[in-house]
Image (cartoon, rainbow, N blue to C red; front, side, top):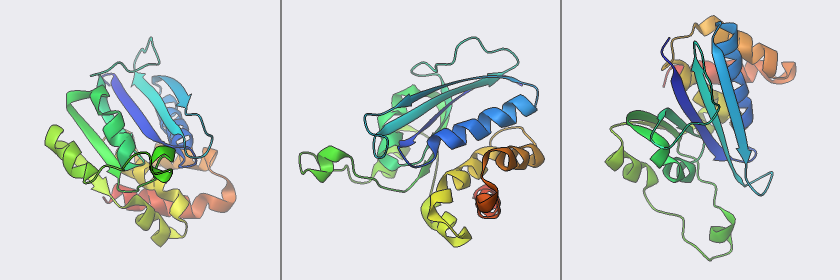
Length: 190
């Protein structure tokens, strides 16, 4: 496998870290080297969260440089826009249409940008945007939207379905596993 660089971006509480751990587990179970670096925003809930994940036969650094991400997986629209300069020219963006207003917007000091997905599509030719929260809600829990996104990512990477399911079973609490497996399958269908 050629080395692949990914950025998983979202807001605290969206499951960005769990998604990155599932991805890392899949890579390790597949015998690949993986490096991961997490950066948390100011607030545990509501602050920006980004995870750099690099996968390959041999990976030396955990950080993805600007212009080097093969895929950006964004759990919130504004985060997709915020991290876009990390994407390779031929890269791809997977984005949830979810909107979580940052504190300056809530306080009336800034305006949430309009038509973010359309703006991203002006710059990036390969964009897939889905209503991941609604899809996860149909599976039984809107909070499983991160796993919907993992299912979408699974279609872009050359790992077996079984290794993804095994990683979910290892990292998701048993009480939530059925909902998350359903969310994964729905994401694979997007």
